[in-house]
Length: 255
View (cartoon, rainbow, N blue to C red):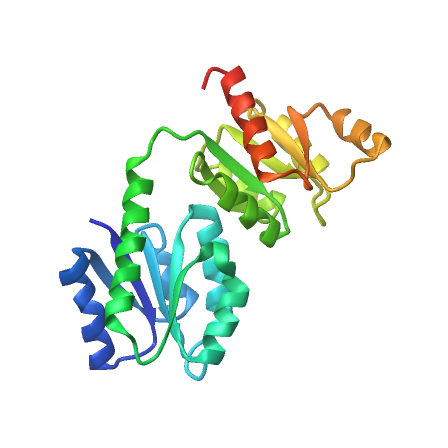
């Protein structure tokens, strides 16, 4: 059984009744929380699917959307949005197509909505049952690029995404990964500095790191390689070439 977290400020009996149909139709566990970060946080690890009923006039919509974006990138989850046309436009821009499972105008078309929840359920079940994939952590402040790479690799590898070196180090205190794809040109804490911190940590120093970089000049590449990462990857790399490179890496390690 998958866990569905409905985020909504609405107390509408009709809306709650429609959401409760999820239990009957897709045999899911469902809980409701208010549309604010403090209410979402205690249930964020429990949820397999997020449904956000957006109401711009009543809740901190953009703040909640930004929080869901960071959360879903880190724990590999998806969001279904419900709202008005202008609310959905904001949600789709912030979350991007890689994190959205679907967007629905009010009033809901329940047949289409339940079908989308069923598809989300299948994705969640597949995720829970798949323990064979190698794990990759993507560390990149460019969330659009990171999520594109996530979409390229998620069918073969278990992917998590964070947006800074600080987030990566925090994530690694409670999670494990088999490889880190680390943006070399990040602001505040550069990729070089993050690698140095990893190498100075007894528990993290042996995690393989490949740098992601946009620059291909010989001077830049030599500067990157002087830091002795496992390898480097140009961000212009094509999808199939990236997959082949990572496949070869894991095969060489006997994974």
